[in-house]
Length: 129
Image (cartoon, rainbow, N blue to C red; front, side):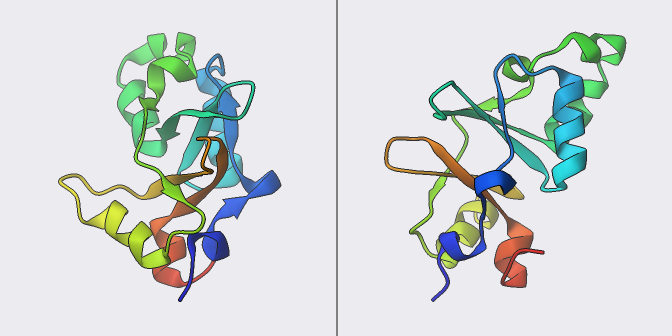
């Protein structure tokens, strides 16, 4: 059975920025990684939040104010997460079987540090692109 660790984007492929990252930095990261989300972490790598493509699209409606926003203002704090040792099936359930489906899950270790990101596409497709 596949585990999250088999499918997640980790190491240098784990998109992470800090709370003070600008909206432009976030858009650049999302465009570069093409994963649909970026983990927001503190100096120790602890996950604080997640900014998704959808968060950015909703924030752009604010007009020019968007360009003064920081990650802290764009992110979903305390997002749903998963462990790298959980099954791919569990990741699928956490993304799909909820009132509002999500496309990406931050992967955290036992101390809450960001170790990766997994997309619904990775789970359904059976592997990273």
